[in-house]
Image 1 (cartoon, rainbow, N blue to C red):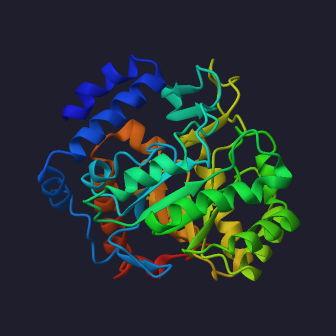
Image 2: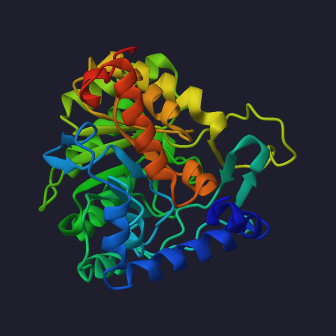
Length: 353
């Protein structure tokens, strides 16, 4: 039995947000332990030639990243890098600090391998994150920064918030991701409507320090909505699409299923894969897709690659799987390629889209 399987019952006996905080402290401390993060990263074999991807002008040593929502304030990048991830996305960060929604706001559905959250973009603000990122000495992987608007900002002024946060954080980002799809900020998902989205993207073109721009979409959009949104993203030359955020659907039977918020984990897997397949078809593969939602195994990851994803992200799968998650999934992806006679992961992107 691994050390993680001994520790997990203890962590899972604690309230979810408390356990999350302890985990982030541990990762922050790991990142500060001199050469240890470098040693552990090398041991976890992050560079996999058959899996490495070049997208948005960036080199990804492997396609598996950590989704936004875990390291909200960009304090644990070296510690997370030590675990073998190919990239890390921090945030969601807003221009000004905000406390998020009242607690409790994070719930585990252990039997279903799921999480419900209604965190509400709790973060210390763009300026503080920028200071943390400026001090970062060890950064061996691409770092994306996920941006949101402050809860009190009116929707008609949302573009100003995104632009403000982007201007503050762009110097420290390898790419920027616009979070337009969290279900926990009132009205936020309306920013995905084609006309509103186009106006927002045109505003972001004014960024003084331009960086690759990705847009994170909801899984609860119908195929026609995804098609219309995809047309806007293609016409605005967006660099990438993250599919998907958490869902408002409740295809689970659990006493906590009635909690409001976004559902992630295993129950999201099929829905997010369907969205990836539909987006890949709508864009005809012209925009790289980052597939996220319910990835717990290499087969889950491979399914999303074949549906059209070029990169992947985990969140719930990491919470349940622990520190060895990246290594196990990457080992399995290499085995999938060998089984199918493919020499590189890019050969199977969209193969079953």
